[in-house]
Image (tube, rainbow, N blue to C red; front, side, top):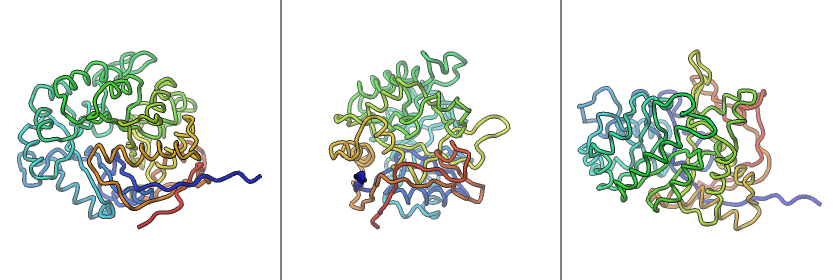
Length: 378
């Protein structure tokens, strides 16, 4: 008997956490996102220099980019194909309540991004989380309905407190800092970005509907053992992959029939040179293949995507919940996922070849994944 091939149609989706970089990389990375059925993107502001002001006319901080400028760069590099583009404001020591208020009134400011100081790629301009709890910035965001996107890790930890079987920088953040944020600013909309731990999942589940979370393909599929066995450096991202019980908590959260808070955000991050003299660049590139990887993750978690009920859970996670959280329209345009193998190759750019995650894990010029995008309506 010939096995039945699963195929189903979804509305185009929003990748609500992705990195597109700048200069010559932009057009290639945007094109990869467009061809995987994205209707819109949330483009992270840890560029060089960071996107740390809203309006280009604000000359208070001449050495940073504005949301206005970076948004224009994205649009002129191919971003006009997207229905929606959100560029968060990078929170720095110079961010003020007035900047939030003026940005909200301008219509350009929809979200801000907190980075722990030096906590990941491009986080050199980050500022301690505790300072924002008392300087009026979060209060202004709450008053003006601006979303806080959090890289939820404590900064400055060493050794065993940063990462081991019982402790991690993310665990500290979601057990100590995030609950205080929730108590002080109960109306502030927050996104716990790229969750990796069961403690992060518990924080989101114990919070109200104004707290959501993004989950990446790699954190649903792999554990730290996959990273360390053979030192698969293309799996190196921050926050780090964690343990099986953490992955199980993430899988349970995104595949639950009652899920209303966990949605897609790939944290896709291109690096033409992954290994450097001083270490390894953090980030997994999943441009062009994220829906396929998410489908693989759902099946790994026990969902049968030939089952209409499980298909609906997948659609909620990928296409509906994030759009609802950010008050974005559900697109009428669609694309299709089909359970047939497809090949993955590198993205050739002016700065070199960007290797998508599955390709980085094999010693070959192409890799194979189990799902394909087979149709996209214009």
